[in-house]
Length: 325
Ligand code: AMP
Ligand code: MN
Ligand code: MN
Image 1 (tube, rainbow, N blue to C red):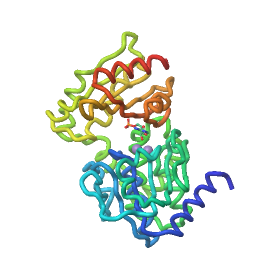
Image 2: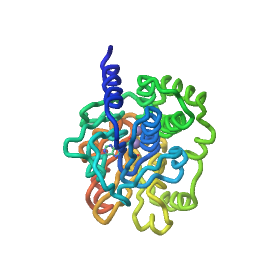
Image 3: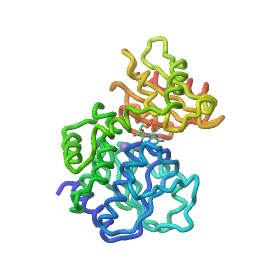
Image 4: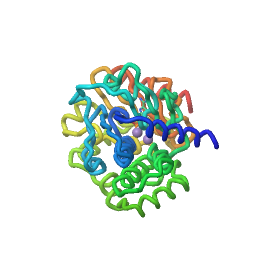
């Protein structure tokens, strides 16, 4: 048995031997975060376990249909009246990514950490971490097989959605033969590939297209055009009525320009904090840059939140990235 097999067995034991779980993913959940939260919920449901799903941040509307009959509580709107002793954290590179939801943990909590970020620091009592997985749902597929559950359409849909979004529609370098092999099985179990691609990747809300129009006018490059970036202020977000997730994907625009090594998106959180998304064309390891600034992620896609005004953070990041090129 290899180490990953051991981890799978330990995770399966954690689930089989316990009950009354809290399932949580990272703040401002994305497609893999919601897909993973939902998939663990469906797994627990199939095993007859009781569970509660809580994330900090709302579930974007387009992901609601993945959840079926299981709501995810938004901790920023509703704090639970009780604490949980058994937690399953998915797609969280470190404990801080769980956000405020950790306030709902018992002091002697036992935590299962399931994740695919190379920067994961193994904060769980049980850790199921495979950095070469394209998405956390890819690991959940293996866990479902280990638990010998009967596949259902909602579970297959959640897993397919996480693969689809974290691989950018099966296009990024994390799109391995194993990803296609799982995707193929999920389609057989009822996931609707075309419906999910249109809903999760193609469709834009009206505020989203207005945001794109305005954000493009901020597109800037260093003189050598190896770094490009887009800036989104809170002012702009408010003006067009954009939701948090509407800026998703903007960071690919500078990165996709010929010659650009690193694309950046600066999204203002408040007057003194900026969320930074980093995307690399392959030469620079942006996870290390993000990690040094308190964040993390993958070689080609990483993020962090940095204190300072928009201008300060732009200068700081452009300098930090330039030093790596
Ligand atoms: P984003 O730019 O937010 O889409 O994130 C890109 C990748 O980096 C995703 O895999 C995130 O999970 C990861 N990431 C983003 N922000 C952080 C953070 N503060 N700490 C650790 N990983 C992060
Ligand atoms: Mn994620
Ligand atoms: Mn992920």
